[in-house]
Image (cartoon, chains in turn purple, orange):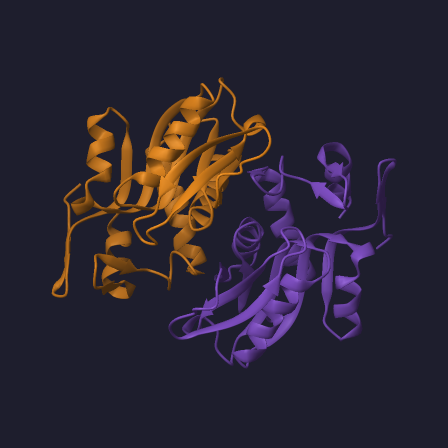
Length: 191
Length: 191
């Protein structure tokens, strides 16, 4: 998606340690017209997938999931992050390590919101090492549901999470893939 | 909003301790068609407010803020919850106590996303004791911006947060106000 690349170049800020700040349009502040285009693009990519539900994780995945939900007319489910190991109730859960914050959260979703008949499209804002998407895939598979694919707004190609999932056979679509990110600039993968 | 009351009666679950579970349509799982109606209703209520930005707090406020943002064509900013007191960087922050979880989070937003010229519409899913809205109002006022009003999907009228804010002069619109909630049922305030 050319416009995602343009937005990253115009408004993204590269910080030390492979961090890309896009808080001015994607998380923290949401450029609502652009967010609609993101949802429309995900709907276009997955229009023939037979998806029945969109699945993401709080918090920064939610705007993208809601926009894609509007575009596709599908319900959205978001998993919650839960610190500590005392998970109560009838839930699916999986531990997920955050490379950004260095800690581990349990990712949790109430069982009744995923069923074996569901065909799930997983979305998130960033795909880097792939730990969040891998956790969400694990939850979908615990529920006996089908993963039709994943969509990320921005993939850090140099951290290999997306390519690992593709090698495992999952469909992974990212609206922009960054293969190199330095003080001199950002290099996008041709798609 | 009659439909919000109907949804609460049809799908809400009253738990001990004044807890109302609406995870099947409002948070955790989002009924996307109903969420569009929520956004449209907030847009109708605040169409003459001159709002320039919608402000909420992660995570369950985000779907409502995005839907209202779509309906009003306005950017959305969401504050983050930050545990611990080591707030770094150029941010506005305020401590907010959660009555649901019993802990205190710092509510944080990067300064560049709120400016003195902004006219802010604050939205959230629940309004109970009003601690989250009061925190968001404090942040808007720290930024020198104007609060045009607040909109909540569901207000627990018996916990008085909404009425306290109204007495202070803020415009507060809730799509359903629950004045009583017992095992026998839910009593809505006439609006």
